[in-house]
Image (cartoon, one colour):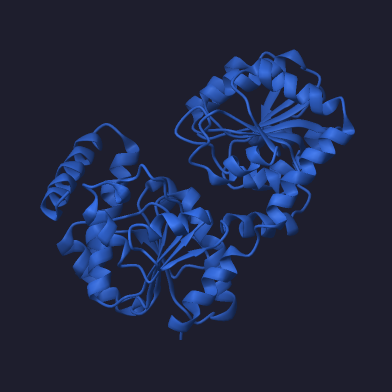
Length: 414
């Protein structure tokens, strides 16, 4: 692929989103957010943020990989300014008021003129990019301006464009990074085969994040009220319709147990749909304090931000997304020593691959397979404890990724 083809593809990509924004709220936010960033650059400039550390994440999940590193930097260097940028509205809308950031904004679209104006004004002392954000004009412009760029939480596979004969432009892009941090040690050799040597293994920084959340875990009074001194059987997080097709038959089979469901989408339509599919008493978290009655066995979470703490209440955890593009964050549950279940599409989630190999998590295709595995673990306390121990051992042996990355970035800080 040539740069001219890439830039032409960007033009059509942007045009498609503009058209889609006439019918889609998320696309409309995507367009509006970038206009706001450009307005800031053109009208007020970025002088007050000049020399900041620019931390870029595609969306909310990637932000969680940035967060422990930002906290580590701020702990030792509180004077450093932090700019957090997003590609997707789903990240920006949730974290636009992030307390450790001096500014949260959308990264300008990867058109050369816009990016050059943005980076020339900001002149960040360091750029930290998470995982899969390989924007050619952004990265090459930063390199031309001698801005050190770090790629964190990266994961590479042989079938990716970097390793194809037509992917030379993306292979050259990897040479622009000061350092690449991979979450799989075998990626080091893979990248060395194409001449990329600035590669270091650093465990997923989300592990540091979930450990921090678990350490600070406090009782949630309304959850205690709902559980009525009983144990929650399953906490199902980030669920989609296809996940509910697995979970709900189990819930209906054992209606006297307690369950917590935290759907991926919490819009009114999605919440009503879940309620309509449940045949046993249920209640939303927002209505719990005023309307709770004994015998209500399913709690539906209708807010963002609680899920990571909720997993501590379940005997088992089900992680959604495994029947879609990929399983969501299983680490949030594993840190609490829980056997974890998820759907078949987990190959993009390195932690899920590792947990399966360690026999610390289970892939389930149907409600029947979920029931069988839960019954097996409930019938043997020894088996349950062994799985839980293996899950937590994975967390304990993979802490510290943030510190590894921080030490590489430290020489560039004030």
